Structures are given as C-alpha cells and as structure tokens.
Image (tube, rainbow over all chains, first blue to last red; front, top):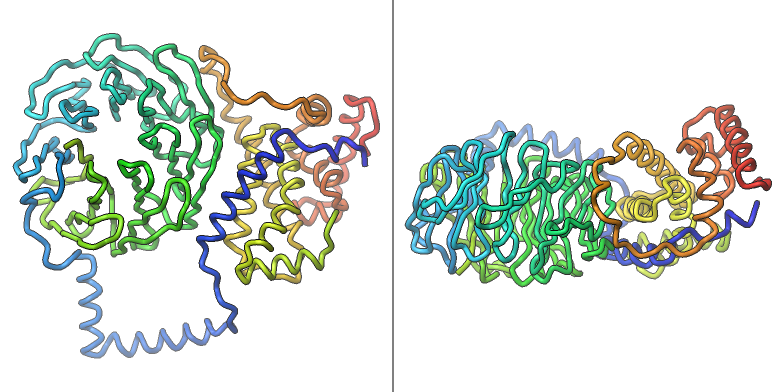
Amino acid sequence: MTRLWREPAPGEREAGERSWQVVRAAFDERVPAPYKRDWRPLVAVAVAIAVLAAAFSPPGLAVLGSIRDAVRGEKNAKPALFSLPAQGRLLVQSERGIWVVQRDGSKRFLGGYRDAVWSPHGLYVAGVHGNELRAFEPSGDVHWSIGRPGRIRNPSWSFDGYRIAYFAGDALRVVNGDGTGDRLLTRAVRPGVAAWQPSSHMLAYVNRAGDIQVVNVDLPKRFAVIRTRLDPVGLDWAPDGRSLVVFGTHTVAMFGARGGQFRRLDRGAAQIVAASISPNGKSVAFVETERGQSSLQLTGVEAGPTHQVLKGAGAFTNVVWAPNGRWLLLDWRTADQWLFIRAPKVKKITPISNIGANFGAGASLVGWCCP
Amino acid sequence: MAGSQRDERAWVRGAQRGSASDLEALFRHHWPRAYRAAYLVVHDSAAAEDIAQEAFLAAVRTLDRFDRRRPFGPWLHRIVVNRAIDWSRARALRRESGESGLATVAAAPQPDNPHTRTLASALAELSPEHRAVIVLRHLLEYTPGEIAELTGLPRGTVNSRLRRGLDQLAERLGEDVR
C-alpha cells in the first residue's frame, strides 16, 4: 500500500473533534434499552387477544370513546381568546386573510392577505395581497406595495427593518423597508426558506443544491456556504447572530455563523413540522409528528437534553415564543385549540378552543411579536 | 489497524451499556478511516464530515440492536461508502451554475496536504463507483470478495473496476498505487 493512503485528509482532525461532540450528544440523549429476552412475539399475541376481548365489552367501548376524546384537546379550555398571558400581539393566518390580535383579545381582520410577518418592532406588517408585496400598519393602512410576476411569498424583515427579503416565483429578491430599491438577489435558490442574521444585512437561504448560503445583500457578497445534507425546510438565527439553527425533515442542527456544525439532533422517524428559538437564544422549541401523534419538544441551542413538553393525538402545526420568552403558544390543529404553555417548565397550560370558529377556516398561528 | 477485534467488541459492549468512554474509543478508532474514505469519494471536506458523522449517528441509533459478534468496521464503512456514492451522484446532477456573481467563499483555507494535490485530485477524475471500490480496497483494506459483499456488486465487477481505476490512477500519479 502506498504512503498516499496513510495521509490524513484535509480537515480530518477538526472534523473529528466537531463530530465527536455531535455523536456524544446523540449518545447522551438516547435511552439505552435494557437487555431482555425477546418476549415481544408472545406479548403481541397476548395483547391482541386482550384488545379484541376488551374492545367488544361495554368497558372496552368506553375506552374507545376516551381515545376519541384524546384528539379533542385539553379539558377546561376557554371558548375564545379573551387575552394574551404576556405582552405583544399575535398574527393569525386564515383562508380569507389575516388577523391582528391585541393583548386584550381584541382583533382586527385584514382581508385578502397571506404570508404576513411582523416588522422587527411590530410597528408594521409585510404581507402578500394578490401579486403584490405590501407593507402596512396593523390597522390596515398600506404604506407601499410592489407587484412582481410569479407567486410572491415568505417576506421577512431584516433586524433594523431596512430590508425585506421575499420570494417571487423562483427568485429571491430584496427591497428596502420603504419600498424602494427592489432587486434580484439570486435565482439559484429553493423558494421559501430564508432567515436574516440579527444585527446585520446577512441573509441565509437554501440554494438549489440544498446547501445554505449566507450572503450580505448589500454587496452582494457571499460570506459563507454551509454544505449540508439535511435538506433544510427551515432556518432560524439565534438573537446574537452567532448560531444558525437548521431544521430538516427529521433533524435539527446547529451551525456557527461560518458553517461549523456544533450540535445535531436526529429525530429518527419523527417528522419535524415547526420550530422556534427562544428570545434569549438559549432554547429551541420544536414540534414533531410520528404515527398520528404530535409532540412539543424543548432543547438547548448549544447543549442539554431534549425534553418532551407535551404530547397529543393528531397534528400540532406550529409553536411560537412569547416576546418575553416565558410562554410558548402551541397550535393544536386537530383539537381546534391553542395552548399557552408556561415555559420552560410546564407550570401552567391555558387551552383556548374554537380557533376555527373564532378566526375562520384554515386558521393558523403565524407570530407573536413585540411588547 | 491499531486495536484488536477484541477491543472493538469490548467497546461496543461498553457503549451498549451506556459507557461514553467506550463509545469515544470506538469513535476515535474508526473516525480517521471513515472520514478519509468519505473524503476520497466526495472530495469535499464538509460533505465528508457530514457523511462520516451521519454514519456514527446511525451507529448510535442502532447500538442496542447491534450484534456484537459481528465486526463494527465493515458495517460502518458500508454506510459511509454508499452515502458518499449517493452524495457524489446527487452532486453531479444538481451542480450549481447560477452563483458565479457572488464573491469567493470566506471559508478557512485548506491546509497544504498531499491529498489535495495528488491522490485526491487523481481520484477525482474517476467515477464515484470506481473511487469507492479503490478506497475500500486500498484505504480500508478489504479483499475484493469483501468489497463485493459490502457493496452488493458481483465479484467480477469489483475486479474490473479496481483494475481500470488503478490503471488510471497510476497513469496520473506516475507511480504504482497498489
């Protein structure tokens, strides 16, 4: 064998150190299965017989009823959203438009809008109306609009409100916060996923190859490329801008701003459907579904175990943090409920029911912004 | 290879019982070859890291079910090499062309390493399938029969890929790589 085969490859040692941290974290989080004789076949047969016997008895029918109840959500739910438990305002998307909900529970409907998002201080909203991107006040007063061919979607504001990134057809575009200077950033993009780095005009997006590009939109100059096989479906920066959390379909991974991966949570068969970083940047809440069950999980950005906060039947579709970081709001679509959950320790859950009746068909939680 | 099969079995058994130090020993022992194998197939440090890391994560996930009587290395290498081939094929299909307007990546410079200028660059000119077979034979030191078993290829295909790939490598490197 030639000596060439014995040479270390570039980055081998550093990659090993990084990967060991990731593997170690995964090892710490796994629950080791105690060694047992495999009784599973016998148990399965016994359980099947017991279930069949029980299912056709009167108590069995009662049990089936309670399983049905499980997807009806938390008990003692309030019939409507009377107030928020913390400062800020909510944005809610429905099929006919968006709702702006104030802390006291009063709400305003703005028809025809979709893909709405708060400006950094909650003074404005950017949303899509037909083929136009519009910036407007929560009262509905439109400040400016801009039309573009192709389906416009997923606008997002930079930290200072001076830039808005949005997708138009297969292109990623940027416009100034006052509606001027609209320009094409790139067409080499997977539409739908982008995130501004706090305190800068750096934008992270996913290119067509599935890698993450971090670009200064004012130059435009590529700052970093993060090659990953995660197939990202969501990006979120920590508030200090030093960590980028990447959500794949089955994985949550944390990267440094220049691309080094320092943490990775592999969720196996569970599918991640939504995630959100806490306002202090220390925790990530994410929702995953598996075999008709959904769960809300909480973990640290840099380290720490992953805790299951709540589990329920059907679909949890989104989770957002209150601006003060003390509450989580979980959208439990199947139960037609929202749950306000005191975080990080679940000391209190306040369920709100009749979400569809109160906000209209297809109502979904978008964001909770700004005291 | 340093470390006997007995060590390896002990590490696997220890890791199954929850010993992080045994898992670390297993990781440290296998990481260099896993990473190097991935790198020599994909020629991309970040992708190699991802691929080797994923193989270890897969090992952690299935640790409880792993049969300790079987060697750990071939199991790991099979995952690494197959994923590296998949990655190379996918990369070839979705090669980017629309980002030339952007400035150069601000990534850390690659160290001056013989791999970057000799073996890796010569290997890069082969197909991923040829690279994989050569890496399995000469880096990971499997016999052609074992390679056939690991990759699911007929033995004759393994031999012909080895022969053709090594001829091309020798031509480019100006030395016998066998």
